[in-house]
Image 1 (cartoon, rainbow, N blue to C red):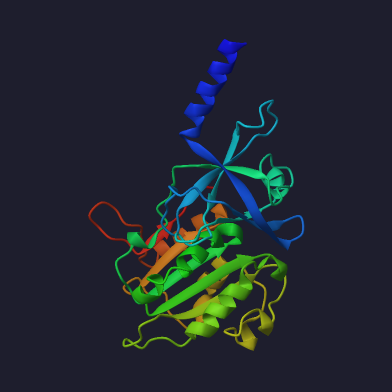
Image 2: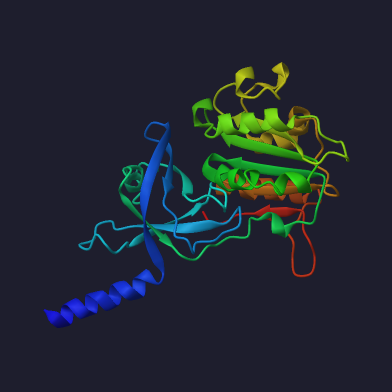
Length: 289
């Protein structure tokens, strides 16, 4: 028994060098049985840059509740200076991980890998005039963290946030985005301005939009559509009243893999490309799904 106990302690010590147990502080349910956000405690040594992601762990179908055996990647929604970490998730009905994650309540434990990952960060870009943050679903996570960072607003003249979902009820963080749009305005273009202007454009594919969803939308642009369809038809630029110009625009893509792949191809035809060694790009893509 003593030998087994020593082995268990050694094993736990090795594992603790890789991850830490954190406590759930609060939970927001954006859409019942589908979308939610968790705030958890944060290890003082856990550092990240807006846009990066962490691996979250849970002990699922295991005899030892102290050793997580299932891990998934989630972008940090929170700002790097916040004391808590925030994560945004969708429940996959037949999934092994997300339904268990959705069951967590304040006081429960969530394990977080100490290593951060990802290159969907603004450090990938040279300065430009327009920053396009294009996402579907929970791909919005990384962008919220960027928008909470003051330096983001100092590098660009305009920030365009596109969030594609099926139904309006899936537009999580909408109040925060509308508040930012109200604070920063939507016109932009003044080179003397110290902060960027912002356009928040929600896009719903299964139902028409309403004017209340975003004051930036004009009445003639409320029809349901997909982000890629809006791009190919030219309506995306009509809705935002801005042009996707590779010489001045910087574009980020995050979300559904099919959207990311299709949008990347469409943008490549317009002259957008990811950076490579020694050459700065104007397109950044997250591929952790």
